[in-house]
Length: 272
Image 1 (cartoon, rainbow, N blue to C red):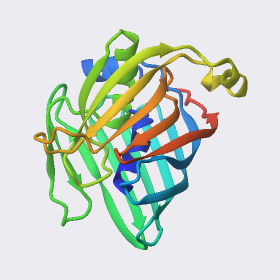
Image 2 (cartoon, rainbow, N blue to C red):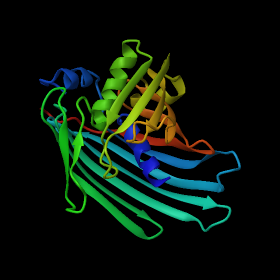
Image 3 (cartoon, one colour):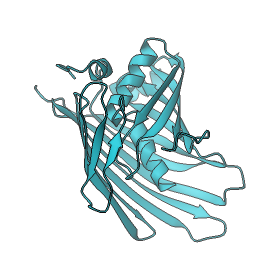
Image 4 (cartoon, rainbow, N blue to C red):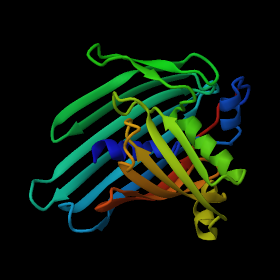
């Protein structure tokens, strides 16, 4: 559950720049992403009975910042899971990252505490150039350096790619993504893009950031093992064209968790 929720936050930026030289990054950043801070409430959406999950409650915070040359992301969640045959478990996670707008550099620092035990993953990823692979160097010497395949994307670039593809009428987008949430290789994220959704007048009254069109998107997250045919989990959401994600449902098969958008604010853009 813990790693999955972390990647859920990442999808806000998937799921969450001028002057770019790379064709992929230049195309990706054609989307006008809005720096913002969003707060969500987590709750149990569905339980089919076989999971042993009896409840879920918590909060999630996501912040996308712009430094002219890079995107910064701070994402945190705290989730309490209830089980029928074992004690409740509280999971707290944070991920801070810096992603170059040219698509070639990505710095990440992930911390997670589950039932009082903490795990950390931090390091830097770099690509050798346009459509080329790269490497990830972890700060912990015990974590092995991993290789990145060609055409891999970092989280914020993935968000922009989804928006651009949706705007051009594409219905299916499949990309390998590295977010630094674990010391594993990139995951495969397959997106099904549904019908365009016009702005909701009621939401628009609450905040101009929500007065934007978007698309219904379904993301399937597959493990690094490419032989696995079934995704670890799926996320359904409405992704607005400015990179803001409305309420999400994270589906693990036997149960699902909802992330409800409670508050959002626009962050200032730098004077580049």
